Image (tube, rainbow, N blue to C red; front, side, top):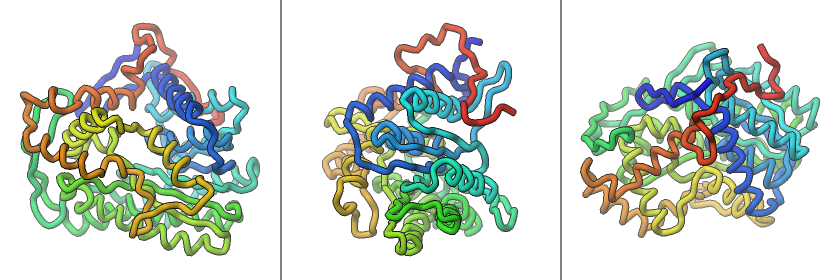
Length: 398
């Protein structure tokens, strides 16, 4: 079938398997071009199919020759209907890993559930024995709690008052004012349950109890801080409360891993185009201005560049892991440079529908967005028939 992007608001309803495969290959080629990393050899990635999780799996495998198990919750293809993009990413990753002689298996299911945790433990015991790195990169808006069965939904809201500022519709380029109503206490509590650290801790507790963590095992989760302009809707909003909880959980997990000589870290990463960030008002405008400045300064990084640098320059240098005064790894250091943030703030004040194409990088934003779904990837023939029925090799067909 000929597969084209089909949009509904900020979501693309289709994905292209050939584009996804080329995008994965491009990331692999980048990691290989940077040289070997003396990193972990047996890696579990929770949330492995897109974004930072996928980049972590690629960097582990093709930077350190690691065996990887990936956990994700993706929609398989049906005749005449494409899979979700993460499915095609994972299928391509497994194919490239197999060609390189690398172990790679995947589990498709709800990572919040006890059942999927047990599946992962059983697979580790059967094939790897133990793992020495656990990446936690879940980005689900909904969580069904495994102990109570109750379902919680996160909210993208400010706390304490209405927040109004500029935003942009990145499809049309229209800059407008947006107002977001404040969160209730229930919104805050639910967001912490979904996006905070509880499930990360549950994973590590389960893996440790099953004796599948190596001596010196590390675990890393991902967070974001961002600039003052996005604070009310992000870091000082409901998501920020969840990130505070995630970061506090790292210390608790480090205590849990102390007898193994292990550690837990939160890596604060750069603002990037994701499905989630595209739906947060204000963020697309900020990213389009940020990209313009960082590209001009020669310090722009995409997802794979961020994670390769995290591994090579922070986690696996042979020395202690550098952290800030709150114990966090800061791989957002280039984004948060004073000179870059000053320039972004100056552009923010000037940004209008009429001048955004000139002062911002809206085209770069759109391109990155379409890349998430396997579209607009160079060298892919989108006019050719594509086979939507691509399978992930290690997942049984249903």
